Image 1 (cartoon, rainbow, N blue to C red):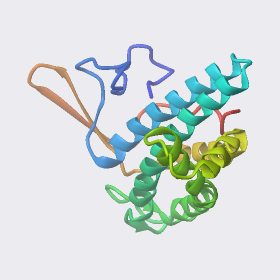
Image 2 (image 1 turned 135 degrees about the vertical axis):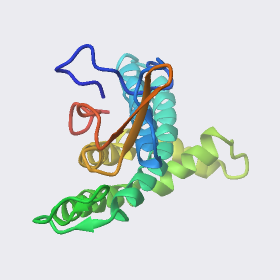
Image 3 (image 1 turned 180 degrees about the horizontal axis):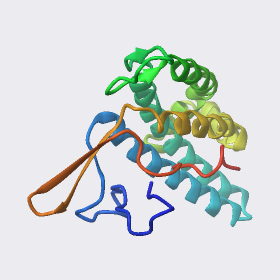
Length: 209
């Protein structure tokens, strides 16, 4: 989320990569969701890279299993971000912006993105949840036919729909005026910022699985 035009601009908090005291820290739930979603997406992208490096089918399915777990967690955070966006106060596009809120045109565009996201999530949710509950977080020993069926479903078709629709919905949301950030550039000084910070978290509209 750093400003690419200014190498000296403070970064945005990241639980692994950016912990400096002068980083912009989330000031509300919407901002925290941006950071958490970025981190989860980063993990998924790393798993995709690792999967492309393996030739064994079983190794590939193992990585897809963990991708499915991460993606299920990501949808839970995306659902919360959707709520933040769609319940934000709306003002007419041709009127003065609110202190925190979105324009009617932004709301209409957001509805289109989140509808596509919801459709993709609903199509995959049952299988993603079953993979987590039967193959990963827990191991089902009562229905081996189901276990075999779920292992067979571990291919890119399980996740590719969501991988395509999450970035557009997120990239639209991140530029809305619903976020707050704060930082401490020096002792005794607190800076507060509203709105988006820096550039896109997703450099492309989706990722190849």
